[in-house]
Length: 274
Image (cartoon, rainbow, N blue to C red; front, top):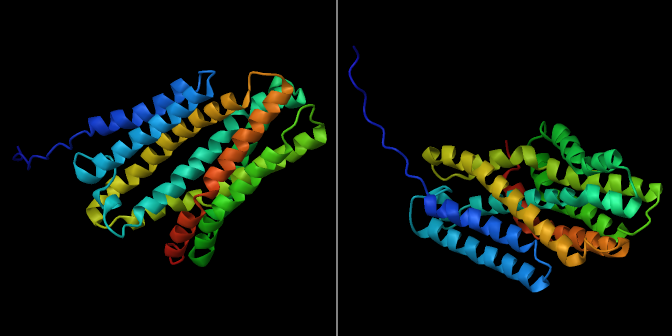
């Protein structure tokens, strides 16, 4: 029989950091159900504070969820994470699209459901041709992604109104597709950017795994934030209140993803080769 090989050291689980991430999501989710805007705001601020504690622990002690090099001086990884997180959060604007289609355009449930899938369809349409590009084109697409996504969401914020005509619904479809394309043109290149930003080869495995972690946490936070914004805007009221809620949610998400433009441009410049 072959001899026993060297024992592998089990990787410790970053239990406290995982609890902090889950707690941030739960804070926003739970407080979004309250009718008071102050409670909603408190939930968002509490989640931000919880995430700050998470980042502090990741920087100063192990075990960690993210690669150690993510917090090294001059590391490129934080900028990639910002782009991943903000694009993923912006995509959660689709959560309330079927409701808005029902309440603002009196769409039947099936049609409202298909309207809700328009952003995801745009994501796919953007990803498929983008996946085959490289070099300067790849870097340019990453840099443009937040702007394109924000344009679609801003257009939705400006056109949200009660008693919408079918022509306006068609415009919503186009704008949702545009927002999705904004995510899709960058998305195939972001895993490569994460792997390439790892300072050490032995950290590339954890860097690759961190892509999914950041995406999932950002999606959960984005969905909870979308619910908070819709609730603050009056989504439970009449059609006029629902239109206001839609404008508030889409507008806030557009501003949020637009804040990622400087990070996206930096990531794009670094990924113009290859």
